[in-house]
Image 1: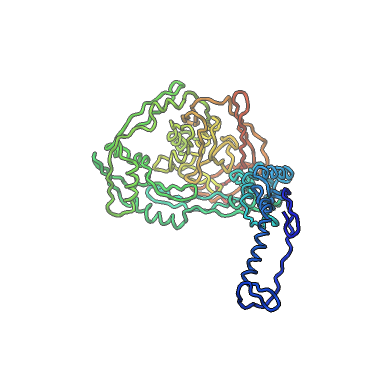
Image 2: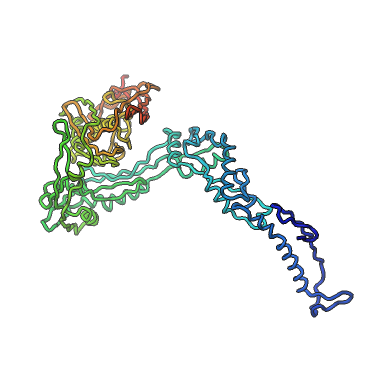
Amino acid sequence: MTLYGEKVPSADDRPTVKVTAVSWPDVEPEPVVAPNAGGPGKPGRSRRGRLLLAGGIVAAVLAAGTGLGTYAYAGDVPRGTTVLGAELGGRSRAEAARALHAELERRAAALNAPITVTVGGKSAELKPADIGLAIDVDATVAAAAAAEAHPVSRLVGSRTVEPVVTVDTARLEAALRKAMGDQGREMTMPAIIYTGTTPKPVYPKPALTVDATGAAHAVKAGWLAGAPVAVPLVEKWPATTREEVDRLVAELARPAVAAPVTLTTDGGSVTIPPAAVARGLRFSADDTGRLTPRIDVKRLRTALGDQLAKLEVAPKDAGLTISGGKPKVVPGRAGRQVDATALGRDLLAVLPKADGRTVTAELKPAEPELTEAKLAELGIKEGVSTFTTRFPGGLSSPRSQNIVQAAKDVDGAIVRPGETFSLNGHTGERGYDQGYKDAPTIVNGKLVPGVGGGVSQFTTTLFNASYYAGLEDVEHKPHSFYFSRYPAVIESTIYWPQLDFKFRNNTPYGVLIDTSYTASTITVSMWSTKIYDSVKTEYGPRRNITQPKTVYLDPGPDCISAAGSVGFAQDAYRVIKKDGKVVKREKFSWRYDPEPRFICAKPPA
């Protein structure tokens, strides 16, 4: 076939078509005349005839370009499309993927090079593989295939498609938090707690941390550009504001304990006094800091004691006790109780009211949550760990009594497979009403009297028992100062409600927590099915040792002296063996501040 004298090759993949330019002369408009009417000196031709002529030329060009269209639309990816400089246009998806893989191989050295990231005022180098940085080839090819391209652009145009980059946001955030170091701060969650029947607000404070989403975008862009990345620290506020905490105190927490509530059932009535309301009304913050009130019916029942027991029979879970060095089953029983869900809902509705403080409840059959059959399936049959710490002062001291009270609260607790045990969640608030007493506690870097002081020693003992059982550490915080009665690094403090200790039962068997005490020791043992040969600790050397300073305090009944201790940093490694091989090696690190030597006296002149 020929077009304007040029021969068009029929089998050439990339034909070259030359079209002779057509120019239209500038002429004055002509009067309308009959078809084919001639004018002076020339044959007649109408405007419609000229349009038909132009249309014919275009049609001819399009007809000649049939092979051209086939060429332009060849392959899944529009011609002229590149990714990272690799030409993917005119290829099938499989061919484009191979071409992109080849380009990534060529750039491997650059793409695998560490990225310099500055978090706040500190810099660190992150390896792309450690944070899951990668190019999703299939997704990138799909994006290239979907690129918009006009027919003419497919012939002579070009377009660049950005690669689809993926990153493991959890690993990236963990790496950035590590790089952040002590520049950041944890979020203070809002709370409302009762001291007796007086509600006290805990106001929210923002975390100073990295914006995970923004950081992910910046790191992906910097990785491709081979440029350093700056990640700023941002404030992250809890969802509940200070004003909302005050509103909850005024509209619910305070009126809730202003008067008793009458609970009526078909078996009789009981009066719920304000002190019991304070025990049962909880204000819990979720992970976002959203504070929500709820009724903890279990705690409410405990606070009512014998009063509610006159109306209902509580179901009793099957349990275990250690007798003769072996776990022994304690049978459970069914009961008849107020519907907990309905009671919580209805009681919460009347607590803000000054009048009409009456709740009607229905008694329903209640089965124990843990039956003997379910207990037998948990495989709790042998001791897997035990840990003991010593305390001074004998059982008569308030501090020792707090330790023993916490041990009694936890004794016999069963943690099922996959469950997370929370010490704060198990004991609740440790106040005077719960049997705890005033004893020295650390607040703002010095010892002051505080209710529940000493419970940190039980926390440390429990932490070590779970640690040497090989259970998963979820949340713990070592003390600010080092105390020689605790193992360095492998210890934990606790403070209601901000600081908690949590571990997860990451085994296929149940775990029984057994506690015991003497006049000078507290012991926690874990019973389950043994799955590890051994769990041991290897210590690194102490480093960055700092000496304490001497601080003179105003003498008085609230002043507590302290001998002081050095500060230092240290690493501890939990080494877990199974079948004669190390299956897990975990690093625990902590830096202790030097504890000042506090002297309750005026400084010497």
